[in-house]
Image 1 (tube, one colour):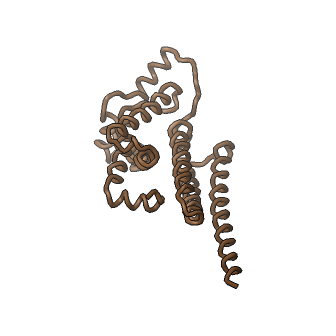
Image 2: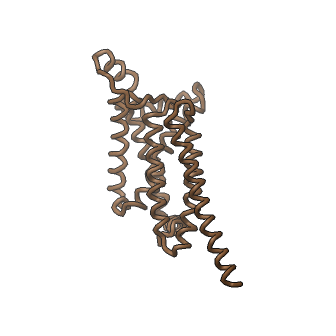
Image 3: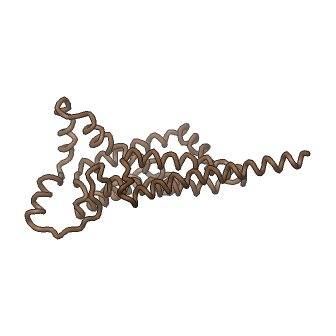
Length: 235
């Protein structure tokens, strides 16, 4: 009787783990379909909900699998998967999302008129020029514009402050992390400039790096860091 109960519990655990991973994969498939088929185009919030839902089920599946295997390898793999999914979402929103006025890698032949128009309308190398433009006349613009252009840019790179120090030991050094973030954001901004997929703005760099730095510093707090390690079975 004891063996039968034990076997049933083992079977239930296996079925639960498999089910959680299947649900996570279904969410990812839906996300992939929406990316490939224009008819099912999703807004940035829809993409975020799909990926967060998928990551939630992956986390639960990885947690159960780690406890079942009695090691933390599944949780480490999950962290890598989460980071890859985040990077895909980040690249999609910054380079390909029509919802945010992006048009993807549309390489076109530059000419003097096109270059001058882009420089005038979409290039800013003066720190805080764009930010002050949204903050100072706050009463004359919509709250949505402020959220998308300021708070949105801060939030966009926040996950880097979570993933990089966890996945790469060297990223726990403050200087290394800041340099890495500057390089990552610069690459995105330059890609937007070259492909005309968005504005190239130093204020985006400032806000993106600031967002990542906020999370980085929060997770440097010992109690929060220990809690994070416990959640992902890293210690």
